[in-house]
Image (cartoon, rainbow, N blue to C red; front, side, top):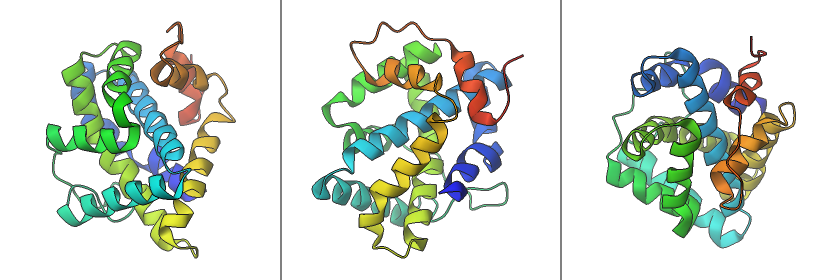
Length: 199
């Protein structure tokens, strides 16, 4: 689903700009934080949507968030619909649907890898979740297959398109999602996600 990936990692400069204040206004760190959050969310969505029940839970959650106005009904763009800042409790509920009981561990590990405190990590997810979920919703609604049934394929394709050309990036996501990982990662491994080599 190239359109989904391009929306998340090519056109969505507005979301990256919204992340910058949480990374000391460092544009490189903002991209790293954004890229790591996108990949982490896609991995969680893919895992959860492997069963019919899991896909149903994810789809119901996304549709509910669209109806509330927290998530855009299509992929974000520089001219796309504005969404309001997500309530931290809402972010927590969404993370629980995606990651289950491991949600606090995922948020904590993300903060350690990206070197952000827990409160700031949650603020980053509050910015990135609408972009990812809106992109997934828009792609699934346009898919000829039933939206809920198309969900695992859409998120799986997007996650593969991120990781296959950038195999080093899997170290980042393993450190965030695998509690047995030694946590030794290089954030420059995320550079190629945005189509350029680290200098």
